[in-house]
Length: 504
Image (cartoon, rainbow, N blue to C red; front, top):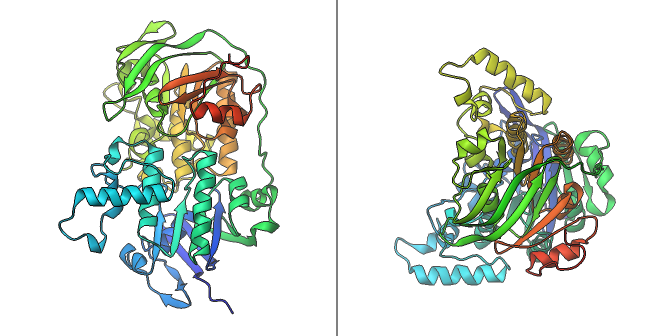
């Protein structure tokens, strides 16, 4: 009889006002890639936090390689060969990539040769096909690059049990396939891999077994070859959900955004956007495609008024805001949903009411009617289907998907002219994805202009009316997604300009 690598038996974890895990059992075998699925707030991250020693279970038992263990801290988990890449990064932003990856390793000592460590980390990055400058500071990296550092950090420690929370959320399809090839090699070496994911096609293609959680309970476990998307969707949400969206043809109005030959710098002082010109009309979704780190984040911040221009002009409804402040952009009707939910978008230590009011304090005068603010927040929470135990709790206690819905709720209810949305589906389950799609399409139908930045080509093809592709901060072309293939866009993402009749 094969002894499982991991056995969690009847694990229960309670937080104030909510049972995150209710007698959950999970079995992970050696040499297996095991997917953990469930809606946002289903208890997946909590269960894995218990396995990594971040939380202690209120009830239940954990066995590793047949031996009962008591994981009192992350240090205990690491000692047992458990590593986790979290959805919200655990990196020190003022440290370099190499310093973050080697931080805490026993063999580094008090003094170490920085050049040798960076060379060692550089070779390791090349080994796994994740090319990142080891000497770069983490704060200088895009969110996608930071996610890769987290993955590399776990791999560098040689964990026998590796847990990845949405590991491909910021990777291109090609990079995701490369990652799963790497995970498959690790599984063949005898490691157990646990992947928390919402990408059903990816899970069906790259894993061996699947466990589904719903409402904090285990719904069931199945071998991957016996499952399909409809089955997993029903297990996750308890009903069938549309896995694709249909949109009506765009009805274009006046220009809302005009960018004329703009250029801007990134956080390292290097040119991130080069002489780029774009426009967006009322009632239109303009999608932006590109591999992480090719200027998408800087473009979003520029359009939202958070990043200064080095050259060019930016206009909102014909008003020149080339030197405008973030406040002026908000007053001009620009809403911004950033990629960094718990850093730029929301304040982790504040509650839902404060975060909802964050951009409108200046409009409410010196005194705030907190009773009315609470009622308005509760109405928005109900309208957008946000799962929250108590509106008075800090928002850092929310799951990633519910954080995203709270952020979208605040920006959409501001009745903007232009909505800048960066990776809106990242970390969302299929039900929440459908909700967000419909929200964006509803805003489009209401005549709003939407700038949609994503690394999910399926998402961009489904929602965009026009699709612009960036490579190294330059515009490779603007195309009609109905007239080009994923392969065409992939070539543009790699640096090939679109000069055919399909350019628009």
